[in-house]
Image (cartoon, rainbow, N blue to C red; front, side, top):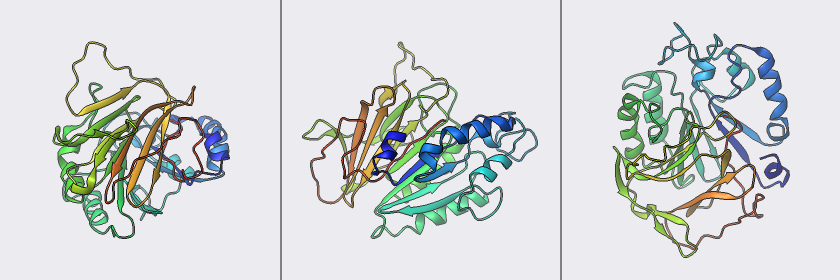
Length: 303
């Protein structure tokens, strides 16, 4: 990712939770901040909060675990001040070029009528699609994962209808330490499948919107969660990888291109396109460094 940033073709990086795994040891934060300096000192570095920043007993987190080592989000908010409305309300949205990013906290209450739920509904409803035609929804814990024990059905039941109602194009998640991409899915039912473009890339047609595409990108530096060789996967799971990497993306008004880059080789492990409006054949660079048209990057240093 540092090489990508050096190319000058990167606008921003998104790191979706479990930032440093310091879990109460301040020196780990110092070490991590030093590691990301070649990236974070040159481009916008946006973050979401995860269980290893926030969760602790009697902290008010949704999940009562010792995962933050007693940090309870304090260190995270000090090191990564995001454009939130108030302290310990780590949800926000930003517009970058043609993309509206909605960033939530999966660790704070998200049930119907909660403060965050109301904010999410209002934020998504307020998007001006003439200015930002793409909506990308991000949070730490996923709504879809084939890896056992990592999806909270209550979370999916509460928020998935909002994503469908407001026509979210892409949902990005961490928490599970692998890569997995879905069809255009709602309530575990594929509402639309991608087709192969002229270049062989999976292409989702959003000229007639059906449902969001979900991608888990938890492949950034902690231990990996391997998929089972004998598992039979649900039809919504289209692509799976257990390798360290990140995703990079480029958006025009009519096309959103995403690549999963395998870090140690620079090769592309998975790629897909979401189209709306005029259809066009996508062109892809198979090198680590993007061509000069690649202006946005989505990714994580460490989940």
